[in-house]
Every structure is written in C-alpha cells, then in structure tokens.
Length: 159
Image (cartoon, rainbow, N blue to C red; front, side, top):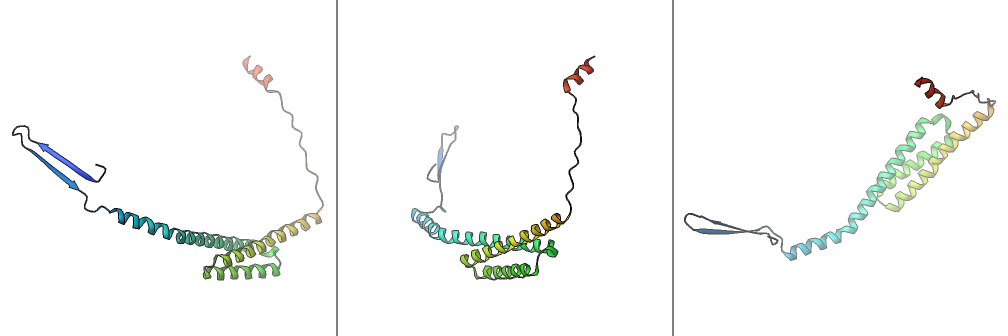
C-alpha cells in the first residue's frame, strides 16, 4: 500500500487453512532523514548554480578563443600586425583569467577579446572595400526573359 507495506494472504480451499504474510520495507528513510536530505540539497543549490555559471563562462571563453584563432589564421594576410598582436595578447589574458576561476576577470577578458576580434572583420572589409573601389565597376548583364502564359499550353495539350 502507500506506506510501503505489502499484505499477502492465501487460503487453501480444500482444507480451509489461511495464512497471511506482511512484508515491510526495511530500507525506507525516516521523515528526519528525508528532511535532512532536502535541507542539504537546498544548501548546495547556490554552490551548484555558481559552479554551473563558471563552467558555462569557461566554455564561452574557450569557444571565443577558438573562433578568434581560426579567423586570424584564415585571414592572416589581410590583418595588420598591430591587430594580430593585440588579439594574441587578449587571448593570452583570457587563458590566464580562465585559470583564476574568477567570473569577473573572465568576463572582462572575454569582452576585450570580443572587441579586438571585431577588428578582424573591420580590417578584412576595409581591405575588400579598397580593392573593389580600385577596379572599375562592370554593369550587370540583363537577360531578356519571356514567359508564355500557362493557360495556352494547357489548351494545346488537350487537343
């Protein structure tokens, strides 16, 4: 039943003898044990939440480092050396802040890396803009396209 107790009874029809057995849970928790466990879970909830936040922040930082290094490698020729040096310094600072396990330091270093990695895009697009302005613009080729009405085609097939 609901209390974790099982009642079993059996009756032999030919002899009329009846027997019953009651099975009780010996491994059940008492109310005080349950209350103690709930209190422990509540007490560790805040620590678990902080640990989760730290792990998420470290993952975000690792991802930012990976993406930035990949961009620098792919577009190395288009990025000025001073921007590369600044980005490499920010990557080093972020890696060092990850080892401190201080959320504020990690966030600060992550923001610096994000801001300096935006310089990659600016350098690439400014170089592409100067390349395209040096070349004369070609006029787009327009193609004439005539579309026949679909209704006429259907009528031809019917005949």
